[in-house]
Length: 150
Length: 301
Image (cartoon, rainbow over all chains, first blue to last red; front, side, top):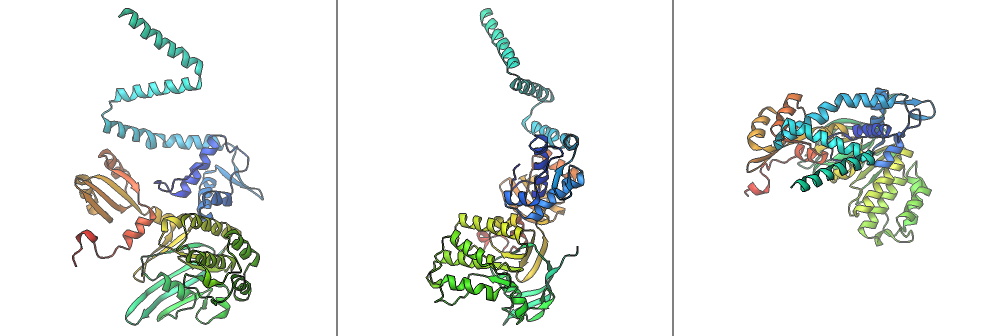
């Protein structure tokens, strides 16, 4: 979790999203204790009221709940709840931004699609090195064949 | 749970001869918040704090603290501390004697905390106050300010003359101590960016008048910068509340109030206009701009 002072997003929103990210990455687990207002305030040197606002956002969304006497906890089902919420915003926040930038750079729709395909291929390969090696050697073979032919 | 008001001003005015230092201030501050008092040099920050502390009697209007008049009110004064660089101690006193006197002046004084802070900042308590360097005086004043644990703590430019590392350390200690011992703390500073994250509310004043009293979040979201082609930006801001505009050749940077709708945002990004947040410090500068519009470059004596 980190905070950028000059982000367009207010600090309390960044706090809420930072906690959500920690839940998505399993740093915070469901039905386990989450960070307290004072922990957040101390860690980032921010006013505890700001930290509380971030936590309140998540309580209102049902991602966190207050367990009596035990402080903030991550709700059961929080992870899928966050995923659903983020997916709803995905087009607006990422896809539209990408298309605007692509337009600026004169990247065609086809090129953009190819880029996504190429990129996701690399991603899969990074997770699975065996597959990466296979693709890599195939590419090598193709080059090799081409040279032979040439 | 109802929130107690600590300070209530009603048409508070202070005149020094012909000069109006505080002009018709009306607002109130809630208990147990950290509040930033922001304004340019000479805006009236110190006069306001001194009026809160009972050093100055209002010319007109009123100020009450915990519902009571403050001027010449010992009971109220023992629950507050005012720290500024002019603070006068008996110059021949040693630091340890000044610290010893803390408990007689301040109801909530914590002597152990004072000694701990002095050790932490490496202050030799056998030194006389007048022998301290400027930075050491500031550190000692801060120690007094924090250790008083006063329900109303007024800090006027508390970090003047301290280096960046100690300033940061001081703000961390202040925040930690505030969480353990909640109280009302008013900090005036010209380095707003440095104290911004500590604050819950800010009071912005200009030439003795109130410009705004808002939560930090509200001020942080107050304005946006548009940066890009002048031909797009200048017509666009015609019917907007403009905080500031600067034009460089074909490029323009405009700070406007943050009230764009979705269509406007799309229009701007499609025209390659970059949108970013106006930092709180800049918002305060724009809202307290003087009448010298063009700046020094266009200034003619």
